[in-house]
Each structure stands twice: as structure tokens, then as C-alpha cells.
Image (cartoon, rainbow, N blue to C red):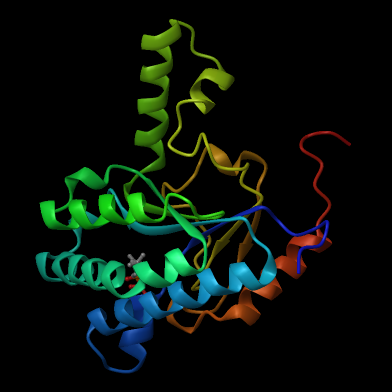
Length: 227
Ligand code: FPP
């Protein structure tokens, strides 16, 4: 199903794993694990709904500040997630893309990610995962590259050097868990994006929630600063 009002590029700030676990008196790691299941569902839902590109905020450059145990749990989950889902991604025609600097992760994770990038290269729809990502850092890097390459820093030259340069323009940004902030995610790219903040905790996110966000998107009239 791809209607004229279907966004090409949807991004999600997947928030609420910890609260989901706390509500059930489970360790936070269980919330993240269920969050991984919600990622699988969201990727599938994008296929059903005809969304060309999904960008997920999986690990921010600020997430290193979480305790050693939680960072370790997230790393373990990342390893398992790639192992368990790579074949399905290839079969579903998903092309993996990374934004941020994943080379800061442990070498075996870097190798797994690089392998996944290579194996999914022929995919026709994109799953972009933000890893060790911060939007202010991305913009600063892009501006520095633009200055070094052309000497001139313009909106266009910064844009051409963002990690997202090869992705379609961002249409819709969703944040789950009821928090209303961007947390250093896609600040530049969100300039004209519609934003939808939803009360659902990320591990509970299902196709119906994505449909709700798309319905809201379709109801809004986008003016891009014009009238
Ligand atoms: C926010 O919940 C979620 C994260 C910091 C991590 C997101 C990671 C996943 C969904 C795991 C799997 C993803 C991939 C791509 C392997 P929170 O811990 O901030 O929740 P809280 O605000 O309720 O504490």
C-alpha cells in the first residue's frame, strides 16, 4: 500500500524500553530485548506500508554514559540482532545503512556490521540505523568536510556531507513513550519533517501504531515555509 501521502522516509526515536521493563519488574535488558523484537516488527511494517526508508535511533553518542552493564547488554543485543536477522533482511530486500560512527564499537561488532552492510548492498529499501550517533556532531563533521573540500560552507554543501546525504528527505519523525524532544537526533534533517509523539512504549510498538502515525501525517498539510 503506497498512497500519494505515504512518507518516503520515516525516522523513529525508540524510547521507553526501560519503563516497559520497570512496569513488569524486569531488568532493563529485557526491555531492550523486547525493543529488538519491535525493531523486527517495524521493519516488516514498513514493507507492508510501502515506506522506502526507515531510520532508527539505536545508540546515541550520549548512550555511553549509561552504566557499563547496560552498555554491555546493548552490545550483546546488537551482536545477537545482526546474527538473527541478517538472512531475513537480505530475503526482504532490506539494505542496511549506518549513520554515526560505528567504528567506536568493539571490533567483532564492527566486523559484523561491515559484513551486514556488504551482504545487504543489493536491497531496494533502506534500514538506516543510527549507532554512536549525535546530530550536532554529524553537522559539525559535515561543515568541516564542506569547508575542506570547497572552502565554502553553504546549506547545500553541508547537506551533501551529512551521513544521510544518500537518503530521501525525512518526511516523518516519530518518538515513542510520550517524551517530546529530539535528543540530538536528525536535527538538520527534521527542518521540514512532520513530528508525531506517541504514548506507546517502544517494546509495545506494532504495525497499527505506525499506521496511526501515517494517518496523522496524511492529515497534515505540509507548507515548507510557503503559504
Ligand atoms: C530507549 O529506551 C532505547 C534505547 C536507548 C536503545 C534502543 C535500542 C533498541 C530498541 C534495541 C535494539 C535495536 C537494534 C537495532 C539492535 P530507554 O532505555 O531510554 O527507556 P526509558 O526511557 O524508559 O528508560
